[in-house]
Length: 526
Image (tube, rainbow, N blue to C red; front, side, top):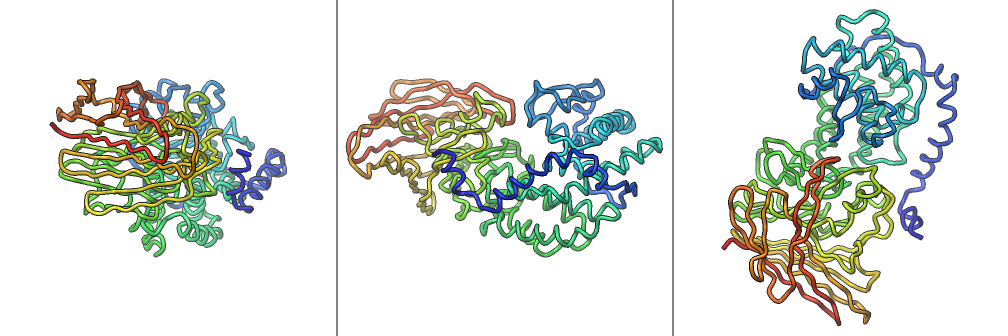
């Protein structure tokens, strides 16, 4: 039944595309499929722009090691079984070529050697190396750094490199991820359009790729400018991809500039402090070090996010769908969670995303208890399982926000016959909240736990019937919940992949015995 609760939300076309891709995998391994990719060797005529690399990682690569998504491994560890699939995918992206390029001539020989090693190992189809997602990122990376790799290289390397560029572009044409959609399909389309613009002989596919991109932007970019996967981190990724594509054209298509113009204010909405994003759904806390200019939106109503600000204090609260129904991969059971900052100092956060391929931690970080919201009986408000799957999910949301007050409710606990509502009121130096849980029908008692995960930079201690809090910048706060049991518990915080820090969580425990339970609490500056 759990699987059915997942599959029932998928579009039939998604299932057909997934089955079609899997059915063709044996064919992709054949000599015939390889031969049909061609033998073109024309050099790129244009190189996409690139961001500066990290020379520290570049120097590590010179030693034969590389650090990716928080883990270090061999620079040629394409098939390293002891490292997670995300790490191996990221190695196959070749985005780290920018790190070697940052070293100048010192890094070019190592870059060519690693590309040559890949060419020798993955001339023919491999399900990981040639998976459409790493293939798309690698194709853009190789086109971006083609001049750096080929300048001063011998003719054999140059010919093999150019031949592989064309072959990878040809293979990409037949494996767009229409089964997944979302940011994956945007990556595929970005690579297809980049190849069409930069590689001779591939221009025929440009019109189709732009047409599909326009359709996908219409689906994926909501009317409020937020990307429909509702992840601040992935929103920035998609926005960056569209900006990179716009830079390829002297006059970018109007639909592209329009989407970028709508997504930029939504991106600024999620910046909590310089270099820090709010953590909802999957991704990392890493954001732009220079906050976007201009006024910050107070709401992304279609996405289901609201922002309150009073003086230096600000918070963002989530009261929207977990994900697009047909794309549950990055969904968390986090409805009515919030993040709360005092100036640039984080106070209350969600716990983040530790890993994608980790049976112990993946769904713990996706679960309700790892978010600053209320849980019932130790369960989850949405049925997260299997790493990237979502079964039962909330379907009804109601939210209002005026001035410094927010109120919202959702039906994520309806299977227990309950509705959870949360009200927040933010004034300078004070955040007051009320969690209300109502029973829709008579039933057994329920245990309620409201959690407020503190950022690792925060220190806290129990002081009488309140909790004393010291922010990183020295500001003192207190937490109180009159008449309720409060405590400090251990928690975990992950600002980026494979990085986990111990921290503390404020717990407010109560019970529902009857028609309604009300948990009132507040953070305040003494």
